[in-house]
Length: 485
Ligand SMILES: Cc1cc2nc3c(=O)[nH]c(=O)nc-3n(C[C@H](O)[C@H](O)[C@H](O)COP(=O)(O)OP(=O)(O)OC[C@H]3O[C@@H](n4cnc5c(N)ncnc54)[C@H](O)[C@@H]3O)c2cc1C
Image 1 (cartoon, rainbow, N blue to C red):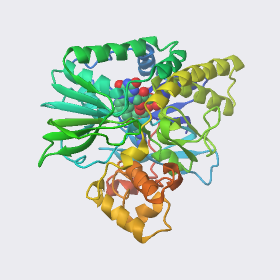
Image 2 (image 1 turned 180 degrees about the vertical axis):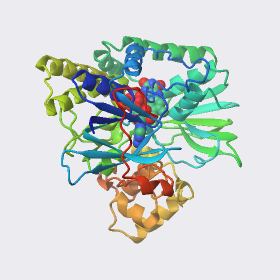
Image 3 (image 1 turned 90 degrees about the vertical axis):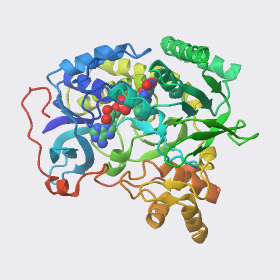
Image 4 (image 1 turned 180 degrees about the horizontal axis):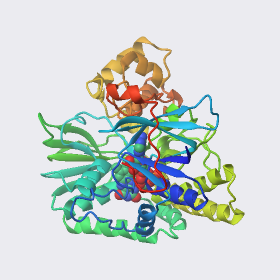
């Protein structure tokens, strides 16, 4: 049995693993990707030429962190394995079991005394007419394709949303020879007062801000149109996107003025991120709704311990705050877990880790406030005919009809049970936000009040035949080799 199982090898998981190993814990790291790095530092498979890590501007620490993690023989890696559920061992109160699945090796169980959920985030899905057409893609998804598979969309691209990642993706596409027609932002250019507030958060993040400015200037110089206060309201085409509708909006993202159509073969949508909390939900952790920090996030104490004994959280599931915050939280959570398991941790180590978390939070709070998606406005984009649950093919009209027929329903799980939204293979990852927006609009209540979908094992799609071996312990290696794929 391991002392600590960490799910996720992004900045949070890597920092936690190294810190925990430094304090004498036996650690296993599980990640469904083939290599460490998480979303921000995704790399192509090792077999690709040019697959070595290239540092991202503003995150110079990443090279050393990844190198250290990959060279560390104390930490056991389970790469290519998805964690599909967390179970408590009744006979052994101090034991947690992580059910894992591999595309070719089937299913098994990893046991540990403590668990750290560091599963990151994913793109916030937004439903509007035409959003399910081939050619409509999420900003993070496009970035991943270019970074990890070296493929980019063909033809002219329009990007629309409300998150600075759009600028990075537009720049990446232009740099790879893809013609970018326009980048539409729902927000206006930040007001001077907002810029002044942001300056307080700058120390340590100047390079990152400067890089964003450079990217914007480069895009404008290359003739890319950047349109503030503009929202994509429809994508059109028969087999594939051929045109998108962009509409001017006011401060509250309400349509203002005539829409205009722009020809495009791809639409890249980026309204921000959703904290990846399905494993925490399934494990029974309490969650709180915090819109600027990624919607439903895992509740935790100041040392990242969740409401479930033995289970901690770090990085984006604790609140989407960027890679600096993830790395700092990973280290702090690991120190707390080591102390909890009786390892000596000097008070100075805690002080330093807590300072790093506070420093990162100063910057992320500003970013979260400026780029918070207006969920109510996004919830209005779907028309009655728009499919909102693409797994079960449920339209907004289906949900509105149900809500009209059941006036006492105020909870998204009741909608799920009656309309099947969120019952498909994605378990609501695509539709939860939209269903919550539709419910909030129908009941004139805040989005968070409608609750959240529950999650069940397996939280990710798994062949039914693999489930029979769920309780088979995965063989544990000795101290080496480093990875036991
Ligand atoms: C697609 C995408 C692209 C992004 N690009 C950028 C960018 O360019 N710049 C930027 O500043 N920020 C970017 N972000 C934001 C990014 O989430 C953070 O800055 C940073 O990566 C967070 O680190 P983390 O360790 O919390 O999580 P992550 O880096 O997301 O790491 C989480 C890891 O957990 C693994 N995982 C999740 N669920 C499971 C499971 N059930 N079983 C096994 N493994 C699992 C994932 O494979 C992933 O490797 C991006 C986010 C996304 C979703």
